[in-house]
Length: 214
Image (cartoon, rainbow, N blue to C red; front, side, top):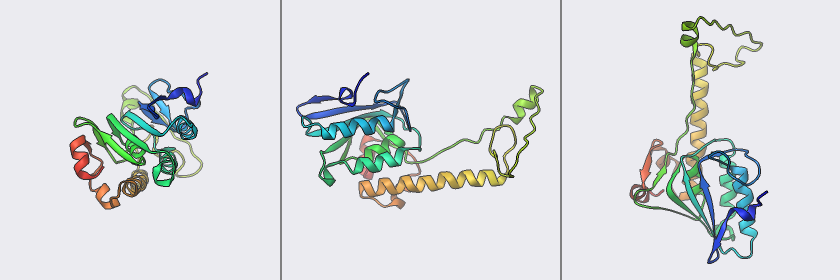
């Protein structure tokens, strides 16, 4: 099996770590799998690169639309504690050509962020889905009856029409998470949380991202 040291290439003292595909919480090991890479994998690889005497700086080569909230901000905070600002080896993020959502959370935690004119960065927002399958079930002659102990147990599932309290809870959840995301980016990039949230979760090309401060 490959080790963390096998997962990056060193050229002129710079270790290049590829971050491609969807980011997930716990993938195990150090290798990407089926278009996914884990925050746990990246943690092991970056820790190894920081400890490697042959490495003078680290480049994160990112091409990712984002991924899971779970584990994202914990890893991003740890990443901020590894770089040059705290006495570690410099860590530079390169959006090649996409660092959006969770991938931008990682990029923003680095000492510097780069991309090309046509690169894409940002998408500093949060989303979840409320799926209602009741009409489809009825059409196919299927009737589901939920039997629960605890009035709010399993509320928000696809087999019943969601009530207002369910939608309010989900909206509060994504709003709270958005606040965490905005605060992280604001602190990392020298902006205010209000400035970050005023971007409304949109994505930006390289030139726009530079002008905005991302």
